[in-house]
Image (cartoon, rainbow, N blue to C red; front, side):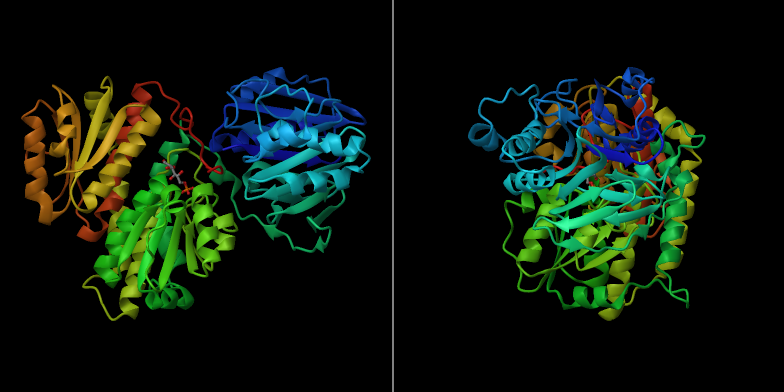
Length: 600
Ligand code: F6R
């Protein structure tokens, strides 16, 4: 979702800002812009479309040592040049970029900004006009900035330039992510450390409702009431090569291929000196003390949570509920007496999940976040964090984070089970090693998945995924992956459920992908396949060695039945990838989607 960059220093800011915006492209956007400042001249360039379009529109003869930039994912107003950021106040004195949603923008417009001529449909323009109003009324800029922030309700990360002061970028955040990066004789602002890794790996986290005065020599953090806050920087431990595509055509394919490595990294990260997979005692004790676990997540992370429920209930015998964050937030179920909440989020920034975490903390409950991003909002605000160690996930469609989430949940389930006296008949490290080898074998068999995608999905309008038990959850994830990147209408169903309505949609040739890796439901899922075949469906059964029959289209290597989702999801990822390629879709940046969904 929207991204912000800013630079103040001694060299030309344009290229640093454009490169930074390119690094934020993965978050999803539909327009982009930069504003650069030399003395009291501010030049704004903005375009609908890609950063490449913006790059072409930037006047290369303009040089400036200060600037801000933005990628916009439309919320208020269509993607257009007028609605793209930066936005300027009527006199042109103030120039602003903003992420988030100002919930009371309409009220502010009506009550405080009557007579102002707005040139965009955005909520953002209200912010920059409000600062100008306060300055026109006699406040100095810093005071006006504070007065403006006190009026805002909602989420924001923002950076402001003042034409009459080329030595400062004014910055603030609430609920939306924003970092300040430190350098020698320069400082930067970024929604994500990745954007500015090109110039620094030293970052300072910002907390909600803090404001920051950034000059090229200093970064001053203050509370809204003006108290100075001291905070040490941290080193962003991201390898620059992790965020490059290398020889891959797409990040998604690179990230699918990285999954065996990620399995092994997770095992390393969670191993103690004796080579046993372990989890921090405080976390295991908190889980043990809870009478019920509530997993809260969105999208792919929610699907990983469904698998996690099975693992925890099967192994540790602890009841688990799994909830979609956007629903849980407004429709919380009756909670048990001693609940513990587990937030699963690749980015650690998802606004829907964060809103639930805030509510849960207000009620005084403990929360654990499982995330790929150390220092992310959900990590900082929970009591405990477990990291995924998957490396940056850039493709919008989540792949390696999903398998990493399940692997970490498996370790959590295993350690909790041991603590509760339920020892398993298998060695988890060994089983995850088998899983890693199986994923590797699937990644080596790409031609097969390319052929399946061509055969079943190159022209179809829709497709169904069916499975029973944990295979059903993999089907949900397979359908999400397919629809988000290939735009084929794909739905996942419990095998037995299709005949209760949706089977009416089956026509001659409708692709039905059935996952069959669970012995206890092997016969029944095959019965469901027969039902759809009898109505003309084109079945593609993905089964597991040991349970396979001649009718199966692909057989994945055998792994322990608890861990089949880690393996059976890989064919669905690769099939979705090739289906999107066959249909000429933008695999890494599907339309309308954002990587980090920072608005509710
Ligand atoms: C789908 C996908 C999304 C995310 C969802 C939650 O491929 O990536 O469904 O899983 O937006 O995001 P996180 O995990 O960052 O909270």
